[in-house]
Image (cartoon, rainbow, N blue to C red; front, side, top):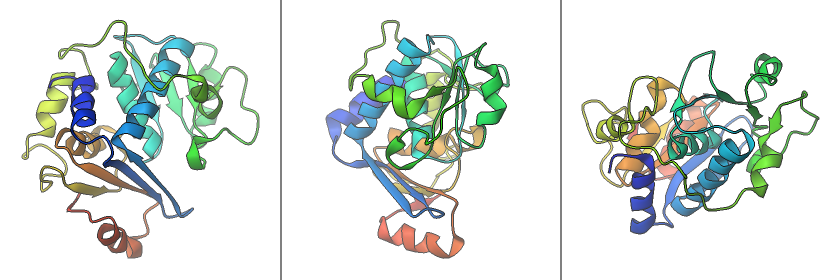
Length: 239
């Protein structure tokens, strides 16, 4: 398996109902859990949004400028489904941002597609109107279908990030000396506070996915509560 689509399809065949991403926000006490199937549905919707609404296509780049959040993992999957390169560049072909970075990207909306996530529970829309040209993910994503097939699917040599191809991404997820959660065993649960859309944090998502495991992601972590989350979620490793 050398592309994201192949890896996700294998997990859907293997155990579609198991948890894949469990998200906590200690500042709001929000908890969200996505099974493999639910995650795949969100990825399909986000893929449709990026292609049909934002007009992005294979070979382009996407900046995911979000804090640690379950939507970060969704847009990672959507980018790799289409064949986009997830970049840290300030000159991407498209942007996914949150409330904290909206003001920085909104002036660019006339030049590049800017998709904004409210980061409110259940991925709902912003409470207030957005600047002109900015797309509200909480509005646009719900009209997209639960299934998606790329008309020009990426291959293993397509860039997945600024540094790794799709094949290298999944080779790395199975390399215990390179992966962030190097103590994670097959099927294990990795507890992390890292941003999965940032270069240092990408492996905290790809490793659990590639190894048939799951990610427990904590935003705004309260150090006094992390051990409790680790035990309650039956995590098996930390990153």
